[in-house]
Picture (spheres, rainbow, N blue to C red):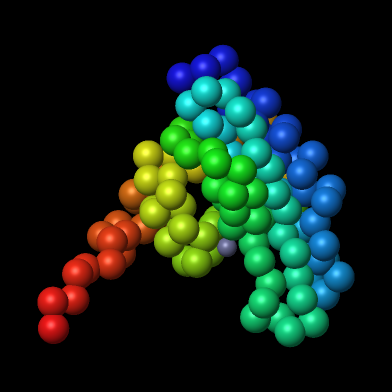
Length: 137
Ligand SMILES: [Zn+2]
């Protein structure tokens, strides 16, 4: 892995969090993905008046990265003002399982960015659905 360390990635997520658009919940989340080549791609949550359309920081970061042609993610940091750090929701776990299956997931509370909890995508979403089976009917 490249030299970008956990602290750099968490700082990038915290900076990205400042771009969150969360007028309804006020719950601002930032995420930063790290590619194997050392690039960092970030995102923040965006809410909608139609709440169900809201998109989490992790997915915004992932969509940013994927649509810029980035692959091979080695880590993702997610930060928010949440005790122990914000855990990715089920939808984000699904997308991470598909596009960043080997990434480490680091979460941190913005009030204690130096305290990281680490997970693997696999442990966050075991037995994930990641391939559409061929339908031979
Ligand atoms: Zn999510």
